[in-house]
Image (tube, rainbow, N blue to C red):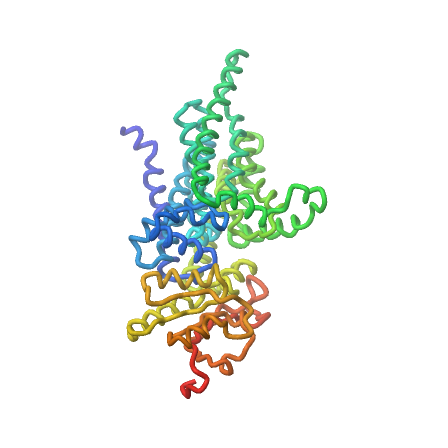
Length: 523
């Protein structure tokens, strides 16, 4: 025991410290500065609320072709946190802890070096790319965790040829299959772990080793597919494949036009890693590949496949491509980046780059936690999360106003119409009003030229009627239509570049209106 403590004292001290610091960075971003709810966050959290309230709807995400494990896992947290958005985001933080531990174990399994393993964990814990997505209620953090553990357990299976490891790999791969469709990458890459098989000298034993591994791999895939087929219990299982087709070009696209959108998408992927990786990780990644290509060829190969190949494939075939789609590749990039520190020749230079990474990452994380509008997010990411209709700026505040109004006017029926039928609105508003049955939220469409008939009928029936809508989703004069402006919630200014604050268009604004009679003098 003393020998173990002596050999692993650095790990016992630094691994919990790094994990705790990474945890605090993510929690601080959630609590200290609550980023506006994003469209998909609103959908996932609302699904979890409905599934919690009605057990017969536990497969509700299948209605949009999405796997439900993330939402299932969120249900217990909804009991612990009064704010449903914080509950969803804390689930991603919990997943990040599992990812960090998995990165350490996987790095040590591949390189047998505690220092490199700790550095890989540190890169993940501090990277603004990871901190940003690990503090959002999106499935990508859970998928990244399953990716790391699937490879780690798959490599253990290949090295040890043990049934228990094969079964654990099956559970990890099965969990990924219940999380998000890119799990298919993990299933496709897993057999490559065979390069780590320990080959005996006698030909007969080699054949036996290969057959044993093939049987263990069969156990893994059988177990993972059994778990995946749990989804067939839901009524809309078939929608997974049909919805995937909405996001992915067919294979024939490669033969007809391989450069579009590959060049644009791959350039964006490099921009994301360079900008919020940040760039020092990219340098270490290149260094790790070059430095270790000869001595650790197998390790470099397997990590390159799991990190780079998904980015290349998605760049070629994805119709929609955002930074979170490559997030599950990031842990393997961090491991390859940390492997550069196996070199003694470039030790001083590598240490300088690591110090730059730490300082740079902490500065970006500080801005992400205190004033995200000034964070150096790539323009496309900033647009979606802060500037456009997908950003839920003002939804929480509008919900608080409506709840306060309901408390002060308990004898009134309240109807709230919102733009759209699905997404940031009405889901974002419904999740905050989940415990207010006296307030009914309904979707009324987008690109409105008139007040919807459903809201006019609500008003005529004597209901107190509100409307929540972004300024880009209607084209009429609110005053002429009998709307009273209750509140205005401006979103972040649009900008042309990650480091410039030049406006390039009108600022998106969320409005909270109340319908009044046209002859009401209070308007």
